[in-house]
Image 1 (cartoon, rainbow, N blue to C red):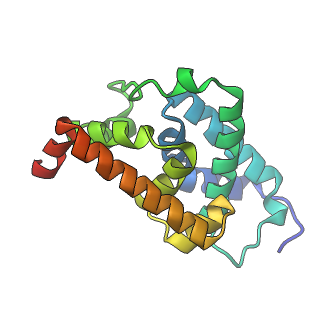
Image 2 (image 1 turned 180 degrees about the vertical axis):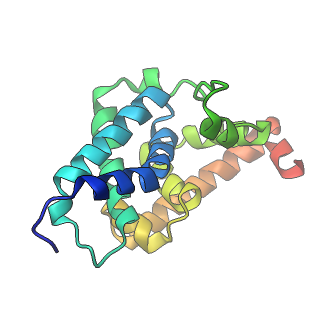
Image 3 (image 1 turned 90 degrees about the vertical axis):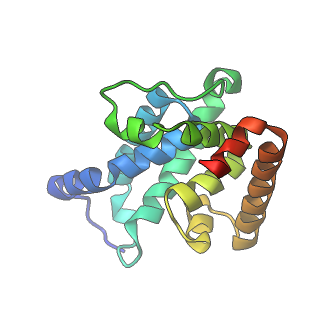
Length: 176
């Protein structure tokens, strides 16, 4: 651990390198672009403020993802669930990263199915599949035991399979 604050140059590098991933995680968890922007900003503000507590012998991304998930949880508690999870996020032509992430119908259908999962299941699916964290790092980022992480992922995948079986439009994903 270090006992010094983050330099302005290091903060810029960290934001440039990780902000798009943090935004993607926040968007997948909240399904709301404006809130994802707020979460991204708040995540980096918290990370910069607590950088002296970061153990630089460990990977930075899992630490940032943990801050992101906790920030998202806190902000979601303040918002109405109905207001946030009514559908797929809007896509503007100028939002190229989002446009790439949600451009095909299959991805939209998958997004819709994932957005139906509980918040805890959505967090695990997002960190493991979208971000690509191994399960032990996902568990660390979520501050839960590995077994809990695995059971949440199992339940999420089971629920996604049920959606697939019950809704014919999701079955086109297999063919596409």
